[in-house]
Image (tube, rainbow, N blue to C red):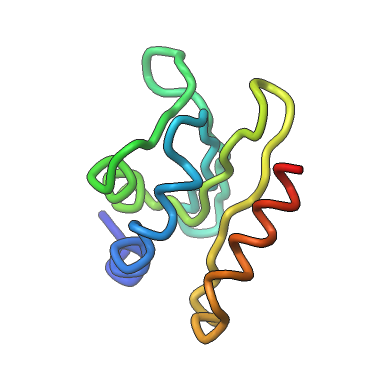
Length: 103
């Protein structure tokens, strides 16, 4: 069963998050009660790619708390979690952090 607040959170952040995910393999942190699962492969064994709002929200309904896009194939990840407690911070800070990681 989806967690309503989690789905609403990613609905609100989808358009800001998608530019960081599109075109990259992505690992995800899924949380089920006290159990945390990291997943980066789809059912067919391929890397997970999230290129649309619908795909992002599908994973949100599956208990995805955070997305971890690859910076390079099989080597580097960066954690993308726009914390709902800090919504007052400008998104430019997330963009600056992502640019530093890419550099």
